[in-house]
Length: 422
Image (cartoon, rainbow, N blue to C red; front, top):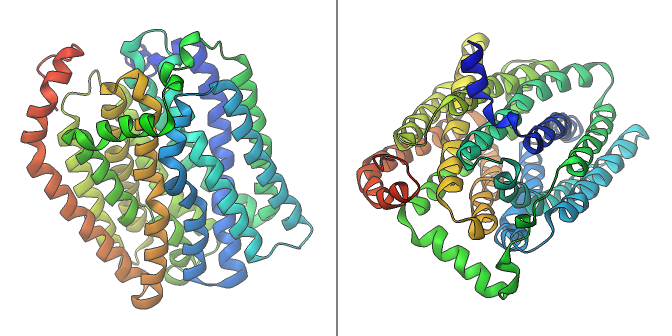
């Protein structure tokens, strides 16, 4: 049992990754506290599905607009200094929200501006962190485990954060959630300060022109069919499945007749499924076979969301949301693990920027579209349509797997991944 546990968390034996893991874990819990509190505050102030979609759209549109540019930047700058800047800017945003809410001056336009601010900064922060993983482990063989544990960390926060937010919202209100998120950034900056940064953390890509660097990353991301297919599947997931969390306050209030605690349970159920998926990924020895895992996870996720749409039995709904959350994260994190494992180090930040754009950048468009669709045909029909679309995408990906595996084989052989299977 101890051996299995040590294998699952093997990347934590590297001091740099361990420090990053602790600091980022606290920050992610704070991020989920704020995200749930913002959604609930929008719903409490307006009661509008459309405005829920608008705020969720604003929280991620910066990633769509700046993701590729941010990826080029991540390959060129001093990552420690850049992370200090992004974390400080996000801390300021959380402090302003906490003060406005505590003083009773918060308005919907404040939340929209705050979401735009956070999303823009996050667009630069994510590729920096994605490009950093290879420098946090001394043994390159532990890179895939570090990526999986990062997903584990994010999704553990998805379980803890919403559950804690539901309790805090019911007892002390939204301002405390925003304040705790502000405090959590201190933990990240502590971790950044303690990490020993190698010289290789500054890439030679900085000697090239911006446009040339961007085109080089784009050629790899969209010119290599397996990576292109993975990015396409992740983008469809972001459009169809990711909006469930932004629209979940409607289910908590209208369908189940509950309050903030009901919202916390629903989101935490999805987080539990996601957490289980990341533990499974961390226990894997190799990325071989992940293609089939991605297809099956995507198919199960789409079917579960469609089934959840019209269900009113709360315990069964929680189980289905666990499948939705688990399938979404398993498909997305597996895709990221494959991409980050096979990409050259010099392209890592740029390709991470394209992945971030596909997953987090497309999400605001999905949130906006789903919010509008929910206003037009109802949130339940919206979930049913979105689930069916993603299930169809999973079938498309499954049918392409043999051809993609053949194209991936030379890369896998070069990296020493026996058999070259996807």
